[in-house]
Every structure is written in structure tokens, then in C-alpha cells.
Length: 198
Image (cartoon, rainbow, N blue to C red):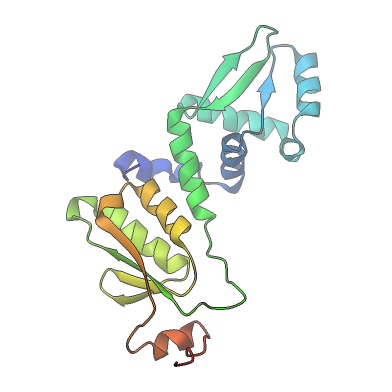
């Protein structure tokens, strides 16, 4: 999902409630309705509890907006029930929402390894490059030098997901180091103790 002008405009879908609706649909929590008012009420009453916490009128407004922007589609079953599902375009938006939820867990014990992310992204993908840099800072990475970031805790899966979302995999390298010169300032920033020398 390389960042485009259209994706830059996607911020209009980033209200907390819209994000929640998108993530619930992406997680496979069914939302459906029928053209019968009575049946619609019954179906909503047996839907997943996460949907029940949303204002029904606002939920319909959000779904209509998503439908207008081709983020969701309607699939009707033989009994007249209409399921609301994410389109391929909607799934891409959902990935962006999931990206915002990423954090790197802090283990109880540091294994003494530094995780390193290096990238050389062409200028034509500047927005993706800046977004990656901002995201790395957001999740706790420290910049060692230009386009080289480190973190002390396991995060391969998180980085793999980030570069997949931004579609910059061939421009990004990830690795681990057991030794880093002049690491004292980073140990201080992460409140870590130096490794015992053998």
C-alpha cells in the first residue's frame, strides 16, 4: 500500500469511532441488517457486544459514508439478511488503522541484543519514508545516524508489518547486533544496564 495522494486524504476516516468500526469489520465481527425494521432490530440485538456500544444512528451514518467511498460492500443472503463487509480498498484502510495500534512489548529481561532498522528509500517515495521514520520514533526507536535506527527489544514482526503496509520492503533492512560501540547513551535512554563482559 504505497502512500498516495488518496491515502493522504484518508485522515477524514480517522475519528475514533470510525476507526473502531473499521477494525471490528476487519476482525470479522459480523454486522448485518435487513430491509425489515423489526428484523433489523432483532439482528442488531444478537450481534457481537462490541457493536451494541455504538450509537445506532451514528453507526448507520458511518456505514453509509464507508459505502459511498467504496470501503464496504453489501452482500445479501437468501433470507434477505444483508452483511456488511470490507472491500479490498477497505482492507487497505484497515491496515492503516492497525498500524496505529502497534507497540513493542517490553520483556522482563533484556537479552543484550540491539535491533537495527536501516533504509534507503528513493525521493519519489518521500511520504512513505517520512512515515516510516515517524513510526519508528513513535514506537520507541532511536536514530543512531541518518536512516539507521535501533531498539533493544524483539520487534521483527512489528517491523515486518510496518514495511508491508508502506510497501517499501525492498528498501528496508532489519537485523540484530550483539555489540554496539558508544552504546552508553542508548543504555541510559532505555534505562538498561551494560551487559556483563565475559
